[in-house]
Amino acid sequence: MKQKALWINQIKGLCISLVVIYHSVITFYPHLEGLQHPLSGLLAKCWLYVNLYLAPFRMPVFFFISGYLIRRYITEAEWKNCIDKRLWSIFYVLALWGVLQWQGIGFLNRWLAPERDLSQSANAAYADSLSEFLHGMLTASTSLWYLYALLIYFVVCKFLSRWKRPALGLMLVASVAINFLPLPWWGMNSVVRNVIYYALGAWYGVTIMGWLQSIPLRRQILPLVPALLVAVALWFCNVPVLLSLLSAWLIMSLFWRLEQRFTPGEDRLLNVIGSNTIAIYTTHRILIEGSSLALLPLFRKGALSPTLELGLLLVYPLLSLLVCTLVGLGIRRLSVRLFGDLFFSPPAKLRLDPATR
Image 1 (cartoon, rainbow, N blue to C red):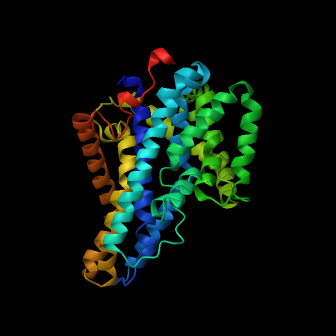
Image 2 (cartoon, rainbow, N blue to C red):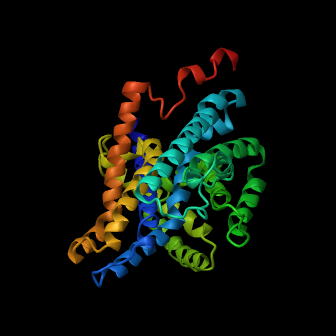
Image 3 (cartoon, rainbow, N blue to C red):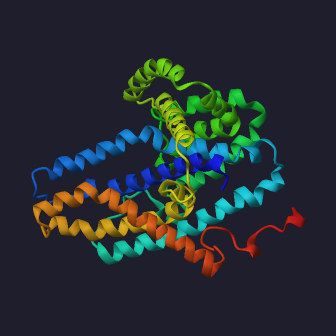
């Protein structure tokens, strides 16, 4: 990997880590019962609030980087050259892991929590039938909605690349309006809300990166302070777009400047994670489902001592991140060595023959 791209890869590593922490929190802490330690309830609420406060930049930064990294396919490549390299490869992973998550999470619930009522769970992974599963996938009601969004964003941005400014204006309106006029599907709401960040990365990423690297830090701080105050105020009014944009700027500026000061290495933790985001992203949801279903009964029955209970609540998201990262990396390695990376890229026989494109 080229050294100049390491800082971007590290941002990807940070973002996927936050996604894993997010899912570990929402599948565990809201369902806790029978807590014994007097601080356990407070600690659980703290993790929930941390999740809430990370929301404005967790996915926006991820999508901006995603758009920036494929900008040449959108602005320069012909459609026929994008189908296999961009669209088909993403669709393949989305479809494969959609099925694997559906079967895996369904099996874990039947095994560890057969009494659990999932009839009201609007997630394709909890579908009772094939038709429900397909409906969930088609409406982005899946933990894999990021991949769904990448497909939609690429097509939209490539099609509208001649009309960038009016398209960005419409995307901004949609990103704000969806907070007040949501669609019936939670995943589709997220798709609409985040398209502007992907488009900015794809269409104007080079310009924004140039500004970020050329403007001295001291000149950035003065206008950023009042802008952040306005952004936080808007966030409390359920308009997070400005805060998300500023967060993306600050995070990218921080990582770029750290790379200039410290020599980066490909074996750094965030870089390793960032190089394997697809493996961690697709596998972590099954692992987190299993761990939460296994641990929640222990809390309900009071099987843990108060001290152990408090300690586990303190580190559970971080332990989940560690386990999901190691397992994701292991599965990716096995996929490459034993199956030609079948679990994360289409097999050669299913790829379009370049001569026919």
